[in-house]
Image (cartoon, rainbow, N blue to C red; front, top):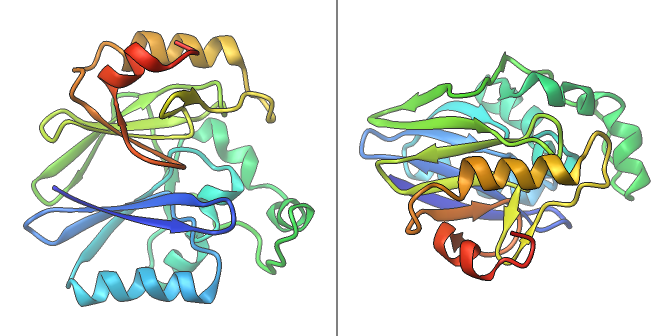
Length: 211
């Protein structure tokens, strides 16, 4: 599996495009907001002859779903996310303006819900969903055991964890989820976070002060 990372929008959010030898691809957290960012993503998909099959969200905070409507308009794919985060799609224009973003369209509606232990297949690859609430109530992590990768959104960062002071966030719930569901994974598992650099489960076990 190949993972292409794009860092988009003023929040420096990591958007991930995953694909394999079949050229089928899945997009995780479309954060592109400017015309330039949208063009960069579109060109990469087209120039590499990728077939975008699904658009999935780790969670639905603004910076992780800015590009969902563009993806729907361009590729005809609606985003998929946990139902417990759907409330975050309400009044997105007003939310964005509070951060200084002048967007005109409301959020793209979801096309399907992602549930715990769901298999997300594309080409010869598969991701398994793991529900780890606390940063947001519907935060999902996507794991490929075969490839040894974990896409965590804002659940876990190198040396840190996601903030829990946003609507319906909860610190104890987040710590419990990370401890019980993520730390038991192999130490070599590479963690792709929603912001910042990659890390590994082993590194976080030893060095993360929150864990």
